[in-house]
Image: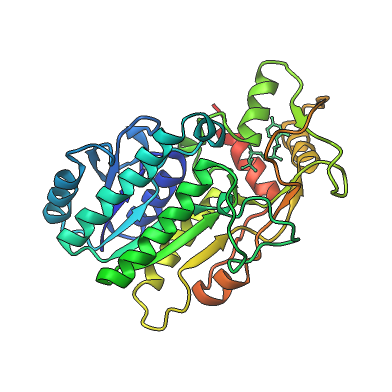
Length: 319
Ligand code: UDP
């Protein structure tokens, strides 16, 4: 197959690209290289473009034709929750505007399959032990809103012109499938803690008084390579005529608290660090874990790696 991966030079996208190349697909990466790294995409073709730019539709159509593209995996997006609150227009322009252009070009070029990178941020602050895809989504920030609207956009395109789609709601992604594809951004708990340790600072715990077993927030940490494999499973699923669902949680179903993640980092790093307990961070749900029964049943996918492997591979790959 010939597959165009938007955001393929990013942390998650580059894992998807490498798995596709390994299984023999032709891969074209569309990326603006604002946070992506060209060196991560290997033998894939690079089409450097900002999906929200005025010439994006023409560039995409040219790429679709040149490489006879069969399907798109759409990961390119701005993804910082805090920034999305401060710059909502930018987030809508980039994430929604970019997707309007992508779907317009796909319709024009008759590329009728898409796997869309969505997020558990679509759920908002659910008060349940494990969130299932049927829960009503109430995102609490512009980032989560853009992801939910993206899901609606692919569903609308399906009704209007027959787009085949699957949206993957990522939970907390961490780890590294290969050392050269490490998460270089310092935006999430694991890389933030690694940076603090490298600078001899105490990692911060945002709140130890949540209604959870140890008082810190619980999240569902999924290994980036498991997540990448879920994209390939979703792509294969689009070939099937008996598809039932189009939205899937991608997590492990197992929750880990911030203190548990820190304990694992102590074990793997061999550094016996202290932590500093800070106030709660605005907008953090106490617990966000995936109900993973749907993706297991319908896509035949389940996470193979747990927290230990996530921290071990992230630590081995740290820069
Ligand atoms: N967190 C923390 N200290 C940090 C960074 C994050 O205690 O320096 C907590 C955060 O409050 C949340 C969890 O770690 O409960 C995961 O945060 P992250 O930003 O990685 O992902 P999120 O769940 O917000 O998408």
